[in-house]
Image 1 (cartoon, rainbow, N blue to C red):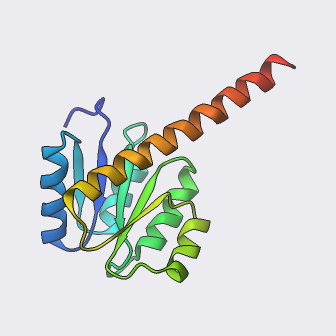
Image 2 (image 1 turned 135 degrees about the horizontal axis):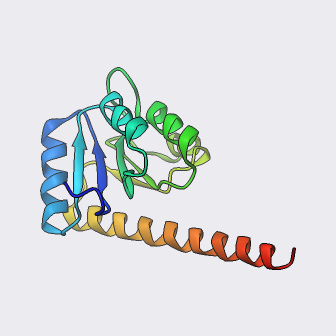
Length: 145
């Protein structure tokens, strides 16, 4: 895969879910890479340098390392990478620690292909808008020094 092209990381321990998500993303012309577990993703993430994903689709319930543990490791490295958590059991109580850790959006499994694509696009738009505002505020602050 061309490392200059923005890509989406799909981290889920269920092969059928990964295949379905990857198929939808290919059809939507969204380059993606799949990872069978959090450790596999973090190995690439820690070694990636500047080739980080543009967005991460992250399953909450995985063996060995939960999605929230993976999220904590992501946040140790960067606060701005958008993460969308996926789970078959999303409720307001389970969302609280994830929101505090910086999750932008949630997808309740099973989800429709159009919901997946729209959630990614919305998440990317929200993140880009927030980063643009922060950048402008930082630039404005520098011009007054």
